[in-house]
Image 1 (cartoon, rainbow, N blue to C red):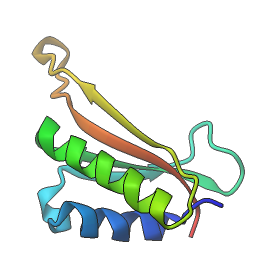
Image 2 (tube, rainbow, N blue to C red):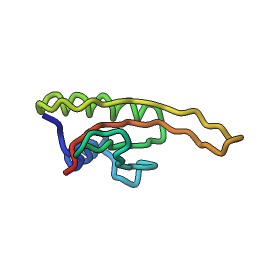
Image 3 (cartoon, rainbow, N blue to C red):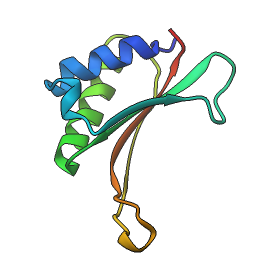
Length: 96
């Protein structure tokens, strides 16, 4: 069973301990997701914060009996292409 997008966001608030203003970005999108699923992404300021959120979310979802996968990625800044990079945590969840 997969957690809903709303539950993933609430768990992120609890695990990370910050308000949404501390995140650079939080999005959902459906690119390549199965019907009724969405990807929830959090972009954070530092690698340490992103690691803490990814590990905490994975543990919280597992402890609650959910099968959602948490993916941790990063992208380096490239000023020539005007990309400021970032530290990302992505979770596939059910719309809700």
